[in-house]
Length: 435
Image 1 (tube, one colour):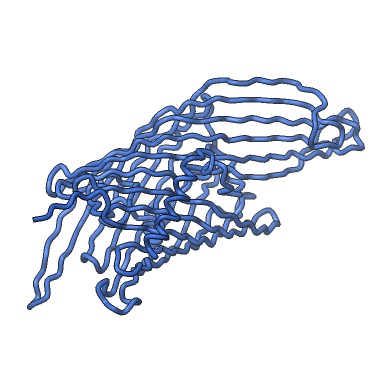
Image 2 (cartoon, rainbow, N blue to C red):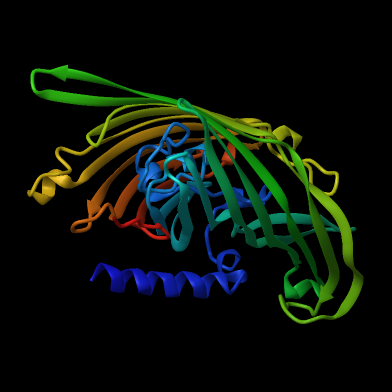
């Protein structure tokens, strides 16, 4: 049964990898805040770490892929194949409005392969969304005329996003020190459409502005983990404990970008069609600056039973530039805390073999609107449901999150998200010796 399920997942993954537009074509967000920068930044980790409040820097799991710190690849003992999806239900409040929206997307595909478990060498590769854009905003505007004002509408619509493919390598330098790196290829198109819509009674043409940026380039992560194990014996019972300190840095880099721009007039009273092309420009080359980011964390665990972890992170978003222009972005900072507990992974009782997870996080996000910061508070919980006679798991998680505020005319976003993931763990590519 497990092998049949694994084959189905493999066929699905290969099909998706064959179509590079699969990830970037997803409807990941409908947030008005995605108008800023490159859109909403998407958490790329798996359902395991998400359910633990997004703690990841000091996580070393031999039977799962932690692509957020490539030094963890040195701990991989089996071939791991992971896939996950997210269901998001949101309520947006602000300016006297209350709107419910929902969407879903494929969250990640991860592969982890142990090259030499004895020497602590492993590799990983996969794909995940990097950011999403999906806003639809309308506002009233007055156009001054000689004798009266014209009440018109400004319409702002954005779509698209950036996807990421990564390849990583991790190795154990010393018994207690592991290092690793990821090479991430980012690509995707973000399209912004702005329309000035004038009531038909004024007999004036509407205006449409389309701006598209295709962004692509390489981004690199370097990670380190310092780790050790110790044991405590009480009578005939031996308890094994692990502690890990981890950190990752992503240097600032300029990604390549090509911009297309089209300004045209629309027929009177119409939001489609073309009356006249006012200005058109294609293939303008520029850069988009991806700023320096860093993460660090610590974990302490009793092996195969419980784990406690904490992370902090930051990104210098004030250095973000797109074709030389800045945006309403500030430096971000976040902190998270999480844990997991498995009563007895060897028990015949299925409930005792389940991994129970919980966590929380706070983030001073990169967004600042009308002088007000857009912060995030979230609580998470989840289950790791083991498959029979294996280390493979079905992972289910939930998140309750709040982003933003209704102060100063902003929008407060309240989210309920469900994370679904599957992690297949098996011994492939091993050379066996027989006496």
